[in-house]
Length: 240
Ligand SMILES: NC(=O)C1=CN([C@@H]2O[C@H](COP(=O)(O)OP(=O)(O)OC[C@H]3O[C@@H](n4cnc5c(N)ncnc54)[C@H](OP(=O)(O)O)[C@@H]3O)[C@@H](O)[C@H]2O)C=CC1
Ligand SMILES: O=C(O)C1=N[C@H](C(=O)O)C[C@H](O)C1
Image (tube, rainbow, N blue to C red; front, top):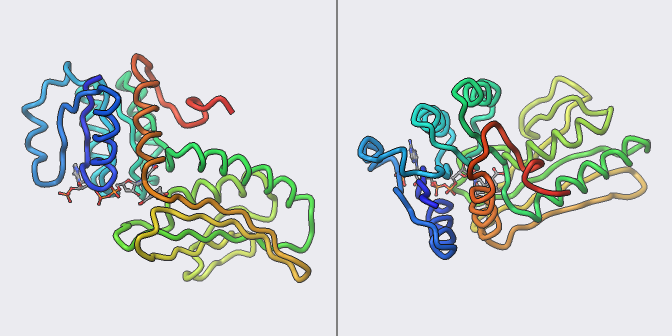
């Protein structure tokens, strides 16, 4: 496949290496500095754009891809207030859009375990839930996109929680799930779910040892997405 990398930082570079090792060709490696190179590309020669940029850049990148008819796979976090509009735009333009807060298979198993645990805890009194995420200090958004997905998994399955809040910001509701964001180098991504009571604590966690799982997941999804039209998520890609 011909792959356009929109964003060529820590993730874009690793995705490029993995894509080439799987015999794909890189049609472009776009950063803030060389963004004008987009005008010289031939959209008909690009099979998919893999977009790992920055919260402020992602939406503009999606709109550009939809205009050019290029399917887009994005892992950029921190732009979710625009998600419904972007998904509607993808459909309106007969485009292809795949977003995941986390492309690693391990984290997607962890999402399912989190949902199952939330269902069990919903039947149990006396536990307070909380989420902690730890990432490297260059991360621009907080909480992480993965922590938001985990919070949504709890909110959908546990009646004591209706929304989430960052733990260092005041919450206006007892029904809010606190998320603590820590920035410690070189953490690629750690997420912990805690249920604490006076009697005991229950804790589940996922720790990424590198960015390999995120990057490989994005390439595998791009291969799967070829020739598909519409809006997709990891639930469509995975068979569990
Ligand atoms: N879903 C997932 O599985 C994962 C998601 N992420 C998310 O991916 C995103 C990128 O992470 P990471 O690679 O670590 O970040 P980096 O800061 O290392 O890289 C970001 C890249 O985006 C480029 N960029 C910024 N603005 C634009 C623009 N307008 N058009 C094109 N490129 C642009 C930057 O350019 P320049 O170099 O010139 O500054 C840089 O190359 C983050 O939102 C992060 O949260 C990260 C890991 C996994
Ligand atoms: O910025 C990162 O590095 C990561 N971002 C994603 C997120 O916000 O959840 C995924 C992963 O945890 C790494």
